[in-house]
Length: 86
Image (cartoon, rainbow, N blue to C red; front, side):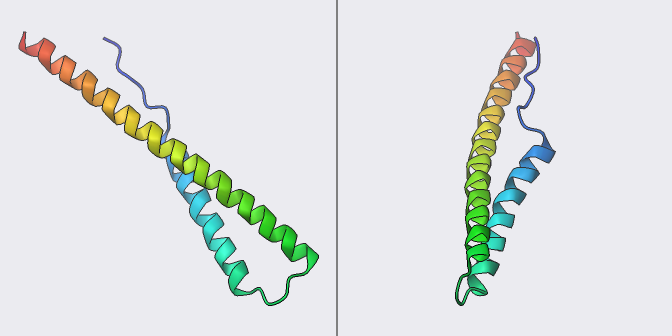
């Protein structure tokens, strides 16, 4: 029986979470320092909002994939244990 392989590596999972939290952190710093916005600062906010959106989507995908992988691996281990008993 072929063992199921996880879709996401640990590095990819860490990168997904880092991207999301870095975007939120940078956006918070920008909001804290914003008194009156110039055009270049508006571009900064747009770039950070895109980073946060990509980070959120990526984090959701990684979390969902890891949960599905855990279910599949647990099911394979149950089947393997049943085969050992028989």
